[in-house]
Amino acid sequence: MVDVTDLLAETNEQIMDPDNKERLRGLLRTYERVLEIDPANYEALWSLGRYNVVMVLGYTESRSEKEKHNLAAINYCEQAMNTNPEFKALSAGGSERVGDACRVLTRREIAPLFIGMPEWDRTGRSICLSRKEYATCILLAHPRKS
Image (cartoon, rainbow, N blue to C red; front, side, top):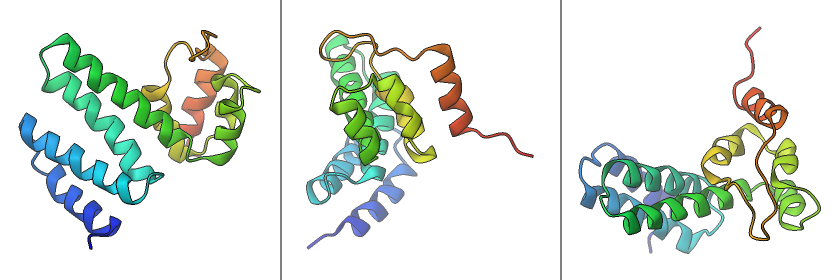
């Protein structure tokens, strides 16, 4: 039986050579296999978000295919952010806007935020980050060096 460690090692090899659409699809499929074993695997979720964006930007022509991969990227990045249980509880429970709940994200979950956050949540509430919230996230992701 293949385990997550083996599959992630396989993705590391595939990353070195995703120079065409089929190879990139293969990489996406391998990360999806990781999620079949470990649905909350942060590395697979975040990588699926990033590489679906690569598919949109470099390997798709039709609008429908771009939309499919863009929505997949958003979905996977939201799931990556939700690997932080405190963030998940605050944002999914509806007690706070996603932008407000971002204060509990660690450096690990900050990057998917910028791909995974749609402008509106599923209820139609605006969840755009304010300038202050955006600046806070940037500072968390890239702290100043003393």
